[in-house]
Structure formats: structure tokens, C-alpha cells
Image (cartoon, rainbow, N blue to C red; front, side, top):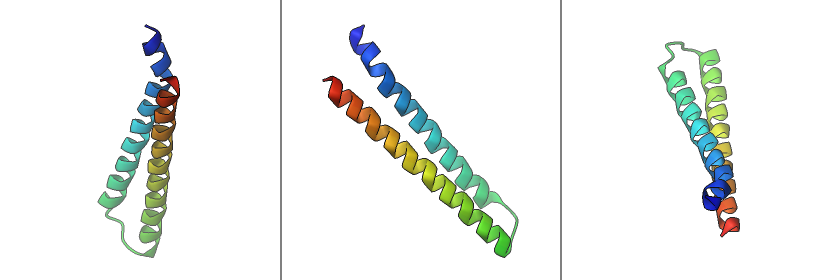
Length: 74
């Protein structure tokens, strides 16, 4: 039981990471599906791509933190 309780924080971080990655993919897909064209549309897509990249970067940070927690507990 103790091992399960110790891994709970890492599991939570990994779950949040997965959600962020999912959001990033949804953002990319939605931006790609837009039927809006022109310079403003391109700027909007660039902003969405930047936001999606930030979500992916944050997810990577959460994965790293989870791995560090697990390694620290061993």
C-alpha cells in the first residue's frame, strides 16, 4: 500500500501531462480544420500553434517531474 501512496503524486503529474498533450493535439487539429483564409487567419493559426507547443512543453515538464519523483522514492 505504501508504494501506491508514494506513486500517487507521480501518477497525478502524468495524468495532467496526458491531458495537456490531448489539448495540444485538439488545438492543432481545430486550427488546421478552419476554413478561414488570409493574413489574419494565418496569424491566428500561428498563435494557436504556439499555444499548442506551450502545452506540449508543459506536458514534458510534468513527465520529467513525475520521473524525478519516482526515482527519488526508490
